[in-house]
Length: 394
Picture 1: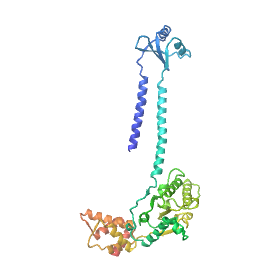
Picture 2 (picture 1 turned 90 degrees about the vertical axis):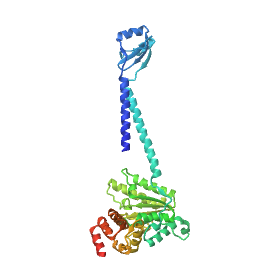
Picture 3 (picture 1 turned 135 degrees about the vertical axis):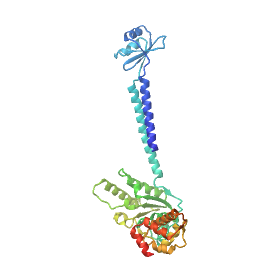
Picture 4 (picture 1 turned 90 degrees about the horizontal axis):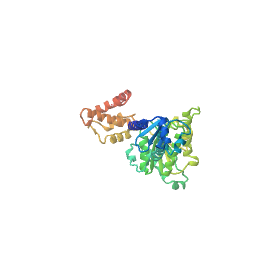
């Protein structure tokens, strides 16, 4: 909204300048004089200076302050005639020439302004895109459950940080780790916590960061991402919604398929081949592993694949304790019973249900969250089958 207003003000100012210039140059306060009288004045040496315009000649007589004007004879010899009779001659810029000059200036300002703005945006894009998180405060203590996965992932990151130590044992670094599973179970949080726990740099991205209306921008962004990661190694690159850029390649000839193929090819080149480099690991998260291109997810590029399922019973208890730290459960609510009722829900669904239950209680003017509040929250958030399953569990 502010940009539109600034553009409108700029256009109004430019229009006002053009109108002002036109009004100024069209205004004529000179005293008309017949050409014959003007001719005689020139021959007699009475004309001091003359300004030749397109239609009129404006001039001054000796000893007078008044400006006079007469018709322009439009003869090739007219200027020579004036000069030979001692008249100081100049050419008047007409309104058309002035407007052309002004519009040329405005065009140049806009043209070079666009170039400068484009360069600025490019520099700003390269500087601010794919922000490197150096001081990551997220730890595994913020992630409930998945203890076995945490241990394996920490070993993978230790290889990332100390490649030489493991190279002596014949162990190469892990290039990529794939996390699959239903949405809302903390794949993004887990990757972030892994980087924080291992104390390495972290770059978080998503598939939409690489999509562009301009062809070949996506592969260029992939290259820029890995270039920044190598400059800040050891570094973990996290790509969420990976199926958005890693879908199976099709060769139908459509523009969108060609761009998708270029992005996948860029990923293949960055994750192995001549550009492969130690100190960078990719963690990708997807809700649809089967849709990914086989060449992209083969071992050697993504060496490990883990499924992040819905939380189990013990994890649900841990989640309830985490999500109710600043909430007050009624003494009649059993966390163990609640964890059993939440069977089949994702982490995000559990968090949303407990938040909605707190809103239900607050709407009734209470601080304590009761079992009825939770049932009402489940009814609002989840589908009918979930509600029925919850009530059967009770």
